[in-house]
Image (cartoon, rainbow, N blue to C red):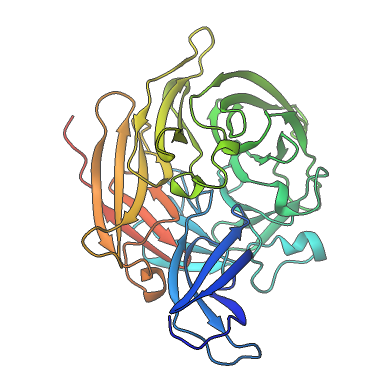
Length: 427
């Protein structure tokens, strides 16, 4: 990275929220990051040592932050003007980018969580949102940050905002989801699931809460008629919990009911820290609803003998009187995103490892895991990890999705998105 530097300060590009320690070596420096992972922008970062006051900087090195939640969501409404559009949150720039179903750009807007602070929409970037969800009832994009903000999916215009009395900053929101006009978030530091009915201004949204384990992290939502089903992963006590949410006749009051829970044999997050969490647990907790009351769960598992972490997947039957957990499916190393296919027959898992043939590049793999039958690899590519800033694709997709017709898988990073064609094996 160069020589003769005194380790004045560490610069990252884009800027990021981190705690850092560093030490000089004869030909560079060692850097140790402590990231606020729910809220740190995903994607590639350049890091260098710079003189104080805008002086010279060393050569830069690039690293990838995968984050904990998916940065992309696809409009699921059939015959809607935006059917199949992809929305990707770019926390480095404080924007939400739109892409057409073929992956071509379609504009951007600012996630307006600053409206909670000032009472007026954002007129510029607000880089504090931690998650993104599509509200198919109102056709709004919800982001969670200082509060929860909704933007019109078509125009980007600010619609409304909400804030949970449980907290006054975004540190307590780990994930956000929406279905049936209900928006929910996991609140890991208080062990709660919080939900509200999406209402336009000047109405005020009221939050309703229910205990959701010790450290609820990821969530998934689906519609069962007028009832909304919510699956939550507790990453502290390895458990999947599922709830129902119903709205009263006034359209404002939510009743949350726990329907069941089951232990899943993944490793509690406390046992992954700090020596091996980076080996496979970053972004490692995901749930996805599939038809018939099945929930796919992806989580890290520690091998105590080797101190290595594997990513594994289970299918959980949540139906009353038949609750069961399938045998584990071992996934490729560093499987960091999971989405359900549009027809619900399988989940797709994205993974990325350093290429053995070219250590400067990353081997990107998309695997398909059906509810019945064998898993298969449906896409591979060796890519430059800095491609998100070079305008090339595909990307290490910190935003990941599947097209409604099953033709494409979306790998998105900040302001870039690629629609890649996959090869589904014959059944």
